Length: 446
Ligand SMILES: NC(=O)c1ccc[n+]([C@@H]2O[C@H](COP(=O)([O-])OP(=O)(O)OC[C@H]3O[C@@H](n4cnc5c(N)ncnc54)[C@H](O)[C@@H]3O)[C@@H](O)[C@H]2O)c1
Image (spheres, rainbow, N blue to C red):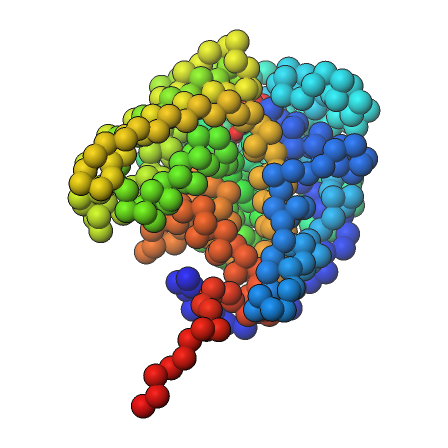
C-alpha cells in the first residue's frame, strides 16, 4: 500500500495552546462548521461525520484488540482550543450568514447566536471578474494584488495577536472562482511575486489568500476546485517555509457516493457504459456555479474521479468507453438541501446490462462541515510533525486531491482511508497494517 519511501518519524510537538482557524469565505459551509464546533463544545450535539472526533484506528494484530479513538491516539488539538476568524465580501456576521444560508434550523442558530454574532468577517480580497455572480461590497479597497497580500498578512498577524494564537490553519471556504489554466506566473515564486506587483490576471483572490497563509507559515487547505495553492510557485513557498497544504474541493455528496461505489464495481470486475450525474441545488454556491466559467472549474473537478478509479487503460473492455456526464442546475427552492441524482449503466457476465439509480437527498454543508474540522486538526498535526508541501494522506477529503507531479491522484475512498490511517500509524511509530493473515498458512516442507 505504501508508494513512498518512509523514514523514521520525527517527534511531534505539543498540541497545547490556542489554534486559530482562518476561513476566507464565511457562507454556508464555514458557518455550519463553526456553529457545529460550538454546539459540540456546549455538549448539545455530536460531531457525526468527523473522523478525528468519532473514528478509531486499529493498532497491531487483531488478537491485540487495540483500537483507540484517533484523537486519543494522535496528539490532535481539542475543540476547546479553536478560535475562529474569517473574511467575506459581504459584511454579515456569522449569525446573519448562518440564517441566510438556511442550513441549520432557526432554533439552533438562535441558541448559538451569542457565539455566532462575535464572528465578524474581515474585508475580502475580491474582484468580480473571478466570481461573476457575486457583487461583493465588503472588500479591501485597493485593486492591487500586492496590496491584497499585504493587507491579508496584516489581518493574519492582528488576529494572531488579538487571540493569542499559538498556531493557525487556513481553509478556503470561499466561492468557486472561474476556470484558470496554469500560467507562466504560477511556475515559480519569483514570477508569482512579480505577478502580484504587476496585477497579473492569472492570480485570483484565492491564490493571494494561499500566498499570505503560506508566507506566514500557516497550513492551507482549499475547499473549492479553483487552483489556489496547487501551483509550483506556492508549493515552492510551502517547501521553503515547511508548511503543509492540501486540496482541492471538499468531497461531499455526489462525488463521495461515486468514490464509494466505483471501487466496488471495479473490485467485482463489473463493467460501466455510462454514468449520468445531475444535481439541483439552490444555495449561493449553486448560484455561483450557474455561471459557466465557475461551473467549468467544478465540472473538471467532478469528471476526473472515475477515470482514475476505474483505470480504463488497464481494463479497456470494462471501462474503455464510458459516457460520463455531470450537470449542476441552480434551483432556488431546494436551498442547501441538494439533490444528487445518478443513473449508472453497468454490465455483468456475458455483457448483460443493468441499471442503478441513486437519488441522494443530501445536505451539502452538513457533509462539508466535519471535513473542515478534520482538515484543520490534521493539518495542524502535520505542521507539528514537520510535514510540508502536498499532504496526499488527506486525499480522503477531496474531489480533486492534490498530488506530486510525477504521481496520479488517488480517488478510491478506501485506499485513501488506508493511506490516512497508515500515515497516522507511521507518525506515531506504530506498524503499518497489511491485512495479511498467516494463521492458516503452513509452508510446504522442503
Ligand atoms: N457544501 C459542499 O458540500 C461543498 C462541497 C465541495 C466544495 N464546496 C465549495 O466550498 C465553497 C463554499 O461553499 P458554500 O456552500 O459555503 O458557499 P457559499 O456561497 O455559501 O459561501 C461562500 C462565501 O465565500 C464568499 N467569498 C467569495 N469570494 C470571496 C473572497 N474572495 N474573499 C472572501 N470571501 C469570499 C462569498 O461571499 C460567500 O459568503 C464553494 O467554493 C463550494 O464550491 C462546497
